[in-house]
Image 1 (cartoon, helix red, strand yellow):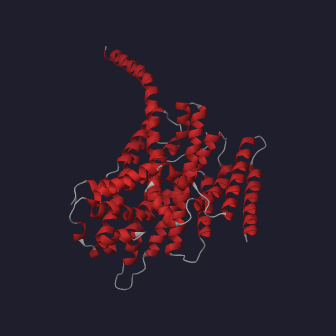
Image 2: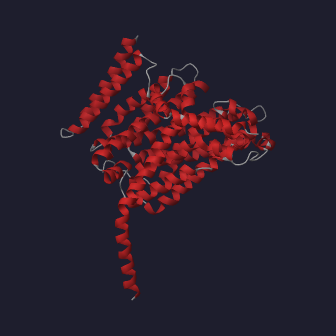
Image 3: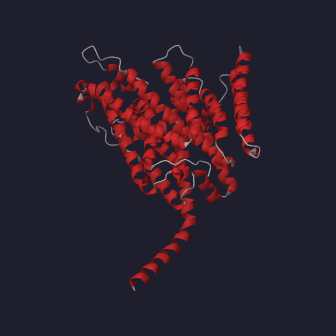
Length: 84
Length: 377
């Protein structure tokens, strides 16, 4: 099952890369590298998600960074709601 | 310039209106109710962030005409810093758009297509959006033109039939605990107002600059009014139950029943939602692609549309393992992250630019004064 998903992802990405690569002109090397790098990044991320759905993501990162602020806000809102 | 298309100021306004309203109508009444209670309809009036962001962005664009947000950073802070911040911005836009796509998918799966896998729904909307984005900013602008009348008609079609059932006593006492609960409740609403920062990427492609200011302010007022009306109607119909639904506005649409004949209007709401979410995802997707192309220094943004679409689909799954965690994050830490990116950093940029350009402006002013004196003599 997992292998089939990975294969599907690979087919999608190769189709994108071939389709876009043929539309680029020869001198657009920077665009070609950017496109292929983004495809590879997407492929790696998708494959990692297939094997581990619970992988920590950007939301966890943002929550860690802003934890002090959000805790302070929650406490402040709670104190406010307790007032008669 | 990467993009050759041009849009009008009013198209920009319509795009921004449709890019902010759909998710705001859907989730904001429930989240605002937690803090504001019966004052939740006052909360949209506290649009501080919207006003600040629009002022700052219009000012920046006045100083650097024809430059997008990434380019202004490059001009102000230098090439390396500017491009790095540009890269952080497009990755953040990708993340925010991932949240939007996920919300869209969860809503469609949760309310209508109960047995469809999430990935099919998110994948197909990203596919459609990728085609529109590949067409350029003009295409996205015309979609906004096309869908805004449909949105207004369907929106009124939901609101008008429930007017007889509204209970005006639900909103009493107005400001019973003073003004503070409504301001606290507006905290989460600030993320939608701060999304107006997106105009910074689109302003270089507007061809009638004299109308930009009025149309953006009109957009902000329209957003505030729409949120006020939708929050007020939700409150007057549902009362204290508002906070217990994930999508209170959907309950409004389900409630409509005219003579046992005109029922199940939630399909109308679904139509609104799909149209607006399409424009919303397109605008954010377009800004992601444009920001990525600009910060990587590409000559064309079209080659990276499809790879970024794939990444967007992956991000929509990656943002959170389930909707509850996502909803909790949206009402707390994501608000701070969006305020940092869409409010604090633009204000910071404005401040540096103001310091840098004040010297130039002073010399200009003395020039103006000299020419005035010359003409009066």
